[in-house]
Every structure is written in C-alpha cells, then in structure tokens.
Length: 295
Image 1 (tube, rainbow, N blue to C red):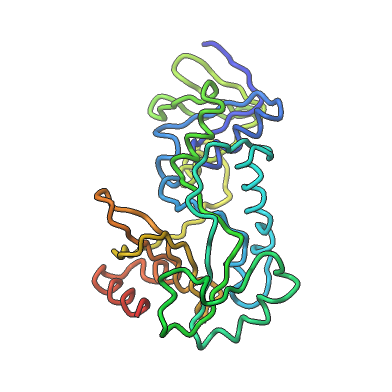
Image 2 (image 1 turned 120 degrees about the vertical axis):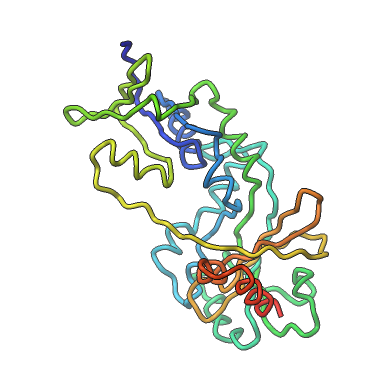
C-alpha cells in the first residue's frame, strides 16, 4: 500500500472545512480535504448565511463572552468579500447588507440605554420610522427598530467560491471502504489504495465528528445539537427581510429570514425561540403560535 504524506488532512466539506482548507493552503501548508457527499450538502446548506456580530447574544441587556467572541466577525467577512482578508471570498453573493432588530412597545425602553452605550457603539444603529423595513411600517407598530452590522450571504455561492479556490485538494471519501486508524499517537486515513499520513487531522464534519471520534478512540468534545422546527410564512413584500425580534428572553423571540419557493413566491422562515421551544410541537400547534406572534 502506498503511503502519502501531508501536513493537514481535513475531514468535512462544509463551510468550516472549506474555510480551513483555504486559509491553511494560503499560509503555505500542504492541506487536503475529504468529503463523503456533496460539499456543504448537509448542515451548511441548511444554514441561512447569517454572519452575526454577537448582539443577538446580548439581548439579556449585557455583553457576554459569546457576544464579544464574534463581535469582529462581520468586518472580518466583509474584508474577505473584498479580497482583503485571509480567505478570498470575491464572487460570493451577498443577499443583504441590512440586518434588523426590533422590539415591541412594552420592551422598547428596556433596551434603549443599553444599545446606546459605548460598548455597542458602531454595532447598533437606532432607526427613524421612515427607515424601518416595510413590514414594520404599520401605523400600529409602537416598537423600536435597530440596524445591526450583521450581513447575510448566499450559502451555495459561498461554498462554490471556497471550493473553486483549491479544487485540486478536495477528494471524495467513502467511509464504507475507508477508515481512520490510530497507532503510536498518530492518526492516518486508510483508503483502499493508499494510506494518508498527515501531521494533523482536522475534524470539520459537524455531527459526523462523533463517529470519527469513536474511530480515533477520543472521548470528545461532545457535539452540540440545537434542534428546531421553523415555520414558513408566505407574504407579498417584494423586499427581503432579515431580522430578530426581542422578547423577554436573552435570545431572539423570533428570527426572520427571507427565501423563495420554487415558483418564486416570497416566504419567511421563522426561527428564534419560536422554533427551538416548539421543536416537538405538532405543526398545527406551532403554526398557531406563529400566527399569534405575527399578530
């Protein structure tokens, strides 16, 4: 059996693996990536392309480690989209440069001073009514609306951009025939016709990491799972809307993202607390909750 050497072998062809492949090879490392199915075809394609700046994790009224850890993320991605970052994302389609946050009238005063504080300067902008997104311009709306620095990317175009940069280093793997093997503290990837011996293996397979951990005899880290059940709402607004609604919890009460059906009908996906707390609800019950939220 032929032995092949490389600096880093990445397992998993979603955004995490593709980003790592691009950055590592840009830094001069010999890196290759293995994916069992389509690139970005599982968790990545199910994501909504939202690049958060952390404010959604500060809705309890104070900054946290989570909110600050990703505070620079939108600027980092925008630099990459201009071709000025560590990964060249020129050619990726941007769905929206506008991401909104709104509160109902009863909660508006609770957040006014916090969002106006120095800690959030440059990350949150309070809007006047004539700049509200169309769905929030109803005369009966009494809340406040803010613009965040967050942006939204088209996930398929992002996957395509990342993959095209280093297509020659991406390989399909069949785990019915391949396996991970660990000997003397070193891990290798055993394929039908060769053995890949990397200096390092980077696991970027999402939920698939659990089985890979088992093959390597590793105990963790455990895979975080956050199941949800979203609601689809058909509407007639021509403009896209990406927004969080603040509630009494430190997480968004609702998160709205814009999409289209195969026939071109505009729809919203409703996420946030509605989707996570209603993950086990019968569809009819969750739809009724969504209608009450939108009313």
